[in-house]
Picture 1 (tube, each protein chain N blue to C red):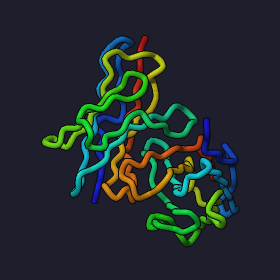
Picture 2: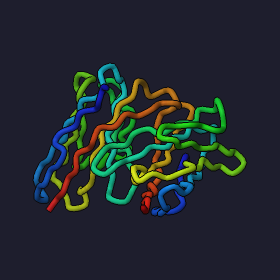
Picture 3: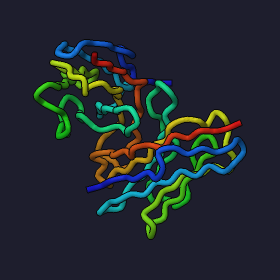
Picture 4: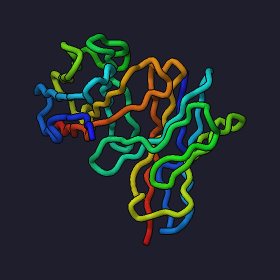
Length: 113
Length: 116
């Protein structure tokens, strides 16, 4: 069975600092991996996705994530945080059949001025 | 830009009452999902449709929840009777097809349910 673990329910950074949100996955088959972002009282929207084409994936708003098979990780990073990045971030995994997308518990990002 | 429409955005009801949520997916999207998101948690899949057929409802509490997508377009999720523990955000999402691992889900804004 597939699963996703997001380390840290809350992360706080200063504006301009590096953002690092951690995600580890478990999958018996090569996974597809996603990061979604959710702003208050809104649905989720896709930040980026990994589909085995390249291990470093670039997404919207300056975010990127690196797939590391040996560590079963797919951490999300951004070099310089903006106030507008404050939101909840969800890592998700689906199998190659794409039958089900499973979400992690989420990490809420706070950005301090 | 195409959106997934959901209504109502907010619903307050008393326990034991019936409640219904509606979702209109992006035109042409064959797959429709209903997720439940409890405060502080990630979305949990309740039911997944491919066109008008259910492909996964293993996590749907069938004693009180029902979902339908009669014409393979819009969908309704019903809860009867509502319980206090049903308070959550109900998210609808759609995608082009369910058999592609690179399947990107497009979410609606959600329906927030409060059961008193």
